[in-house]
View 1 (cartoon, rainbow, N blue to C red):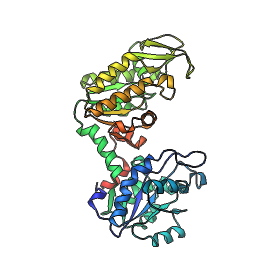
View 2: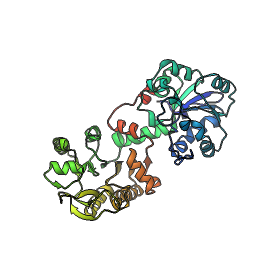
View 3: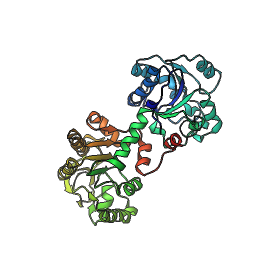
Length: 395
């Protein structure tokens, strides 16, 4: 993949796939601008070179045109973040777009309407991609969050720029961070996997057993392992049909000399709420009618020790129901341990929906090495897949 730093964009129009799929409140204000912030250095590099930018993105999952999901709602936030004026074009394809692109001067930026107002975007339509490509001299992909999709603006458009397709700064950061975990990370390498289901993480576990020295398994999926080992888990969530799979993972880890750490104790609740009564119990001895909701103090201590001995850390998934304050202590403790390990020189990567939410909620964002912007894309990378959007830049 060629980086944008290997090219001068002076006098060129660059069409850039960004990921501005950001959350909006009821007034259509952006509530988290981190994805816009993440694209800033790529856009400014092209502008500072004396080039011009045509930004394209999706927002949400519209079925046809939906003004609630128009990119016009993002203009104010993008201008504030970039500290530059941008021109919004209320269509992707059409006369207004052609006119705006024809009049585009160097160091100017235009933002096209939501790509997903056109079904051709998600179907990977060749003609749609070709029309987008006709707007520019070169193509830049800086949208890691959609790199796992075979869409027109990510996987198809690149072929129309055989010698002028580039990876933006954010995309490269994401790819390099995952490579550090999977290939070049300093040992010992630790994976921390949480979340509810073994079934949704099985391909990741399979793939990373060859890469890690230690693996912490927390969250709801830990109970499937505990039940498989003969423990009593009360009414804790469990995939009963996956207990054999859990045992085979433990066996495989043993063969590969990977140490797996499961919680030893849990905070249990009698209700899924902040008002629940709680008790602390050994994880394999939860009374009937009680549900494991968070890792307990002994588990936190055990995990802290493993985390602080690690030089490379991947965190994907919380270890408790952190959305409820009463059951957030375990996830906060993991965050604190990773932050301390990072301060002491470890490389830490956090990615995948809920762990990113937890890191933001408890203010660990600046205390870890890197927080991934791409949920599904990161998970597929950890599964060992080459993402279509990245492959298109390499071909």
